[in-house]
Length: 318
Image 1: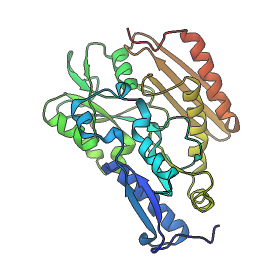
Image 2 (image 1 turned 60 degrees about the vertical axis):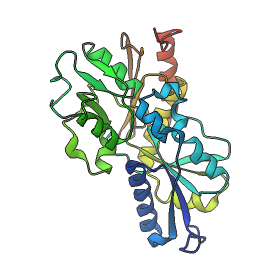
Image 3 (image 1 turned 90 degrees about the horizontal axis):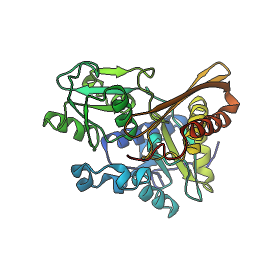
Image 4 (image 1 turned 120 degrees about the vertical axis):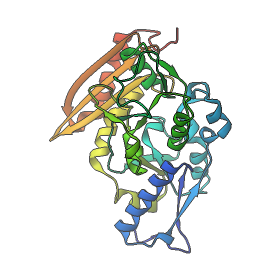
């Protein structure tokens, strides 16, 4: 354990986006560090950083993430502030994180994973199956859009961006009949009451790393490394090692519909993977097990197999 702990005079600066969910995740990180090291709240400073992905005009215009630059939209400015030492650590939703970190930064601390499932949210219908033909579903996720197209091609899927509160307002305004959100985020916000139904992973495999919070730091920051080691959840790290290796092997980004989920059973890791054509016309899946310590190798191998089965141009838009 490090003796160089933060103090109210020299607090540990926690970088985060400013959305209610991002702040809830930063507060959870602070609470875990406070408990682990018996520190007061004043020993930490939460620093809100606006990212390109938070630009109000882009949210209101419902511009697809793939047209704006993908996952780095939510991390670039935060990582720049960490490299310049404006902040000490950064709290991220792992499903937003690129598989590679900038030189000088490392991501090796994960909090215990929340519910991985997708939530069906609507004002007038109880489930995806209950939606009438031609109903409008809003989603900015290429994975969810492709999965919907494969399962319910009769639905009209439209672009739908913004944080949880923004999306709920859009539903109220009649922009769409239904949308999908992550159960994990709704639980962290205390908003599970808006969920009409949680979708079983057998019916809709979630995004890689969905429900997981990751904390990034500078590689040479020994104090941050020691503090984060104390709150790292090993099983979550083992699961994400397999899932993110799978994503990396597919060159996964916001421009490719990819789903993946690793689960632990004793000393065994089970990994399920799914890739889809963007229009939902073809879905390829795989399901394998391996010893936990071989999880990353399993993810990489599964990616190679699915890539070979898919052939060139699988993710192209038609």
